Amino acid sequence: MIQRPRKGRGLRATKEVWAGDVLFADPCFAAVVFDSLVAHVCHSCFRRQAKLQRCGQCRFAQYCDRTCQRAGWVEHKQECAAIKSYGKAPNENIRLAARIMWRLNKEGGVVSDMQLTTLDDLEDHLSDMPEMDLKELKVDVHNFLDFWPRTGKQHTVESISHIFGVINCNGFMVSDQKGLQAVGVGLFPNLCLVNHDCWPNCTVILNNGNHSTINTMYHTQKRIELRALGKISAGEELTVSYVDYLNLSEDRKQMLKQQYFFDCTCEHCTKKTKDDLKMAGAVVDGVPEEKVKEVTEYSVEMLKKMENARLEANYNEVVKICRECVEKQENVLADTHIYQLKMWSTLGEVLSYLQFFEEAATYARKMVDGYVKLYHPNNAQLGMTMMRAGVTHWQAGHIEVGHGMICKAYAVLMVTHGSTHPITKDLEAMRNQTEMELRMFKQNEYVYHSMREAALKNQPMKMMAEPVEEGVKGLFRKK
Ligand SMILES: [Zn+2]
Ligand SMILES: [Zn+2]
Ligand SMILES: [Zn+2]
Image (cartoon, rainbow, N blue to C red; front, side, top):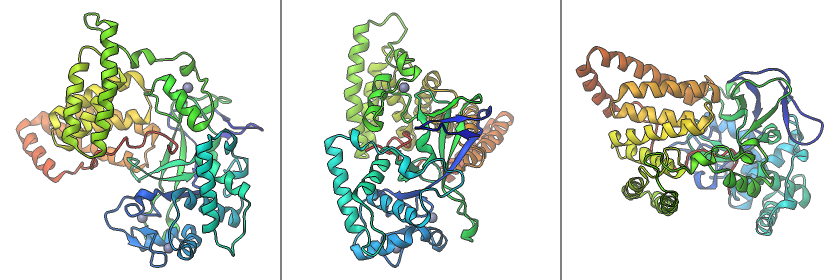
């Protein structure tokens, strides 16, 4: 369904496709767990686990169980020996580069029939990199050479630098099974060929594969899927967005230039589409422009304060800051103003974590209403937001609104994630449960409320642990 032009980046559809169609599945070339999470995430299936078992050899790699360890052995074997002789594990960049090199040595640059490019062909943007980053890269290359086994095939500094450059601009965020938190970084060669558009016609989703069978032979591999967001005609170029659309066009352009070294000339950037909505004042009683500006500036300060409190996991302080801020924003900023949306989203999430469900639901709903006006109707971020808001409403006992939101979220995720993705499966279970509860509610409210209280105690929908910083918003890893 895809075709690559003879030169450069870019892929085209070879036939007409529709929303939710998978244009390609790209198996992972190599991936590693973030340094900060090596003791919390399985190095094979990338699931977050409270208890992991260490590799007896290197004492570094950790796994859910023997099955995961066996499944991860091909990737870990040489790494394991190298860590043992080096005496410690190097950083995530070096671990990923080494895994890529071992795979290249063993299988060459093309490891599947579907792979449209070799790693040599991928851009490394070394010549665009700022001095500081280049220095860091040189340190990594130096440490890589120390880590790399003397007895193995030796590589030139140039070819190692190329791999580090490729990782730097194409390192894809690998999330946990549910896609709720970024836990590692990996390389998916085909994805590197898909160009960016701030209003893209495709989305990319990670599928960690199925590791539930005991026999590792039946495990399916980690892969990403490129899925159509709507109708795409034959010959049309396929695009994904590397940045969150909620940012202003100026900010998106700056991010893209800084991390991916290009100037975005997409339609939405050129026309600054929806920038006005994202910075607008409230329409009530003609709020003066000066006032909107003043509250916008105030919000920037409060957002900084809020982020700091959040990093310290001081959630009561986060709520205090947000409440103070939304009071000033009310009736001054539009319901699509991104600084107001940010406050609402934080309040919804943190209040729900602190179990103030009623208030959390109010903000979650405002946030969804704002997001709907800004995002593409099939945006994955929008779907996930609707899902969280639906759960919050369910927790607050607003079963009708909650069920409605969960149904809408399900429709979006069927397109962006597909029916077999673990999060879609969770959502389907939630949809069935809320549907049943809604029927009960309509028959007998009293029975419904007593049942809901019991359900809340058991927390069957406990899918949101501590509010995680940002979740997974960007495609590629940010430095
Ligand atoms: Zn595992
Ligand atoms: Zn090991
Ligand atoms: Zn753009």
